Image (cartoon, rainbow, N blue to C red; front, side):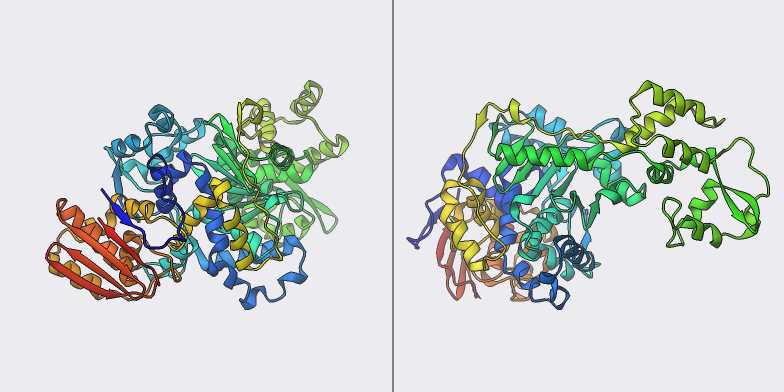
Length: 582
C-alpha cells in the first residue's frame, strides 16, 4: 500500500482508485496495457512530442535545410535519421517477466480474459492461417515462454530508446515496433511539420504501423517508410511490411481526434477523419494490374518465375534466359526486371547464361506483358479476364487458377478495420489543436489547457514522467509492482552489495529535470539521479523484505531513503519535492 503526502498545491488532483491501474499503465506502457487502454497509444506520441529530445533534432545539421523541402522529402530525411540512430529491438527479456494470471487479474474488470487471450500474442494469439504456418510464437521468441511466465513487452519513450546505447551489445538507440511508430508520429509533427491530422496510428495484435496522408499515403514500418510504389514492388522488405495488414485484424486506430478499438463499444475519433483514413488506406492497399506489377509479383512469388523466360535482341539475334536467373542478378545490381532498366540488367548478365533458342515449357515474359498492355485496367474478378488469362498461362509447374488467386491477393489487401457504425457510444473529447509553427513551450501550454477534458492528453503527461505535473501514485505503483529486472539481477547480492552497486552507478538520469526513470530503466542503463536510484533500491528491498518500513523523502537537491534502520542520502538534480511511504 502506497500513501503519498503531496506538498505541491499546484499538482493535479489525486488519481481516483478506479483509474489507478490505467494511469500506472501510462508509466510502464507494455503492449498489453496499450491493448487494454487504447488511449495510451496516442499518449506516448504526446509524451515524445513534449520531450526536449525530439525538438533538439531540429538543430541537427542533418535537418538544416528541411524547411525548404516538400513534405515527402522531409519524411525521407527523417527516415534516414531514424535508420542511422535506432535499431529495431525485440529482446523480450529486456523488461523482465510476469505471470499470466497476474496480468489477467489486473484487467479482469476491464476486458474479458478470453478476449485478451484471443487477441494478444503473450497469451497464445497466433493470428490467421499465415501465422500458424510460420509458427509466429517461435518467430518472435515467444515459444520459450510456454509456462505461466510471460515477458513484459514494454514500449519505450524516446529517452529510453536513446539510452540503449549504454547497454552491452548496442551501439545505437533501440526500440520495438510501438516505440518506433510513436517516435515516428512525434517526429513527423515536430521535425517535418506534418499536421497531426494527417497521421494515423494502427495497431494489430503483433505490430504497430502509421499511415501518413502524404503523397498518396505512406506507411511507417519499424524504422522504414513504405510508399505505395514500394508496397507493391515485391521485395522481401515490402512483404514484411504487409504482413500485419494482410493477416491481422487492426485492433485500434489512434489519431489526434481520438481512437477506435475493435473490442470496446465506445469511439472518440472524429468520424470524418476516420472515414478519410479508411478510404485512403483502402486506395493505398490496391493497385492496377500492369506489366510492372506482374514483374513485381514474380519477384515476390519466386516459385512462379520457373514458368517464364525473358528474351533479348542481341547483335541482330534473339536469345533467351530463364526468368529466375535474371531475378537473381537483381541482388547485386541497381537495375530491375520490372522497370525501364531491364535491358541494362540483361546486358550485365554473362552471355553463357543465355540460350540461342526458346526454353521448352516456359512462357516468354514479353508475351505475357503484351496481354496486359492489350487489357489495361484488368479486373481479375471478371470471368472473361480469368478465362483469357488462363488460356495465356500454360505452365507445367503451376496451376493457372492459383496464379489468378495469387495475383488478386498481390494487388489488393482488404484491411480489417474497426467499424465506426458498429460503435454505439460516441465520446466527445477536447480537440488537440497543435501546429507546426508552435514552439515546444506553446505545445505544452496548449496540452496543459485541455488535459482535464481529454484523457489521451492527461495520460500523455504521465507517459512523459514529469512529476511536476502528475500525481505520484501511478508512478510509484508501477515502480514497485512492474519492475522485476533489478530484483532478479541482484538476487545473488547481499544488501550491502546492492547498496554499493547503486551508489557506484553514474549519477546521471536519462530524463530531463522533473522527469523520472523507472527502476528497471535505472538498472538496464546503469545510471540514474539520486531519486531514481533510491526508487530502484526500494523496489529491490520491498521484494526482499515485504514487511519493511520504507520511506523516501524527495527534496529539490537530495533523496533521503530510509529502509528500517538504514538511512541513505543521494544527490538529486530533479528539483522535486515529495514524501513517500512505500
